[in-house]
Amino acid sequence: MLVRSLMLGACELQLIASSSNGKGVAARIRLNSFESQARLYENEPQVVARLMEQAANYRTAATEQGIAIPELLPDLTTTPLYVEKRLFFRVADAMEGRSNFAAILHITEDIEGTPVFHTQIANPELLTDVGIDALEAMMTSIVAVARCLDWPLDKNAVADINADIDRKTKELESTRASTDRPE
Image (cartoon, rainbow, N blue to C red; front, side):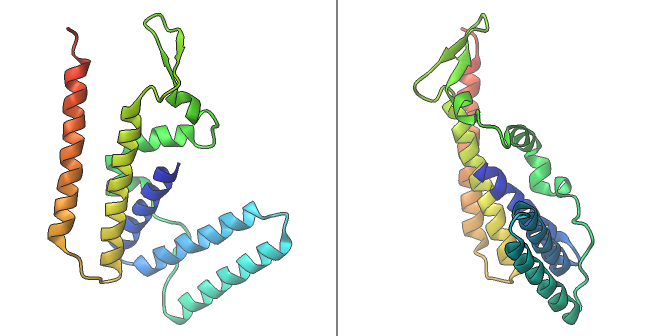
């Protein structure tokens, strides 16, 4: 689920970068994080109090700086990365919180549907797909952060890395297509 978290973070960065109120969206993301942590630590009042104090400090600073914090975040599912990787997110969301992920990697079914257990990962392509998605999420995050912070960005280097990711993806798809053909 690390890749899912990275990709959702990249989606949040896309929200910030594409919003006319990017600072407010960034503040809302942080406030939502405080609220989520407070729910997690609901049985520890001193932790909740500290989190609520931090949230209040963020609200005060935003007000002092003239930043309007939206009540709700814009919909993450509308970001370019989410739209492009919708299938990945559906699978990741379905697997979230489940303890059978490791088992899924080691079990396949034969033609009759009987489970076949493996001591090594049965579908290494899945891990490759996850790795490629992680790289794409990291690159999206790097570019979004650089733009938000007005950092210089070597567009040629970014283009080269993205081209390498695309090339590797196409190689994998080509390999799969040739191995999936019936003989």
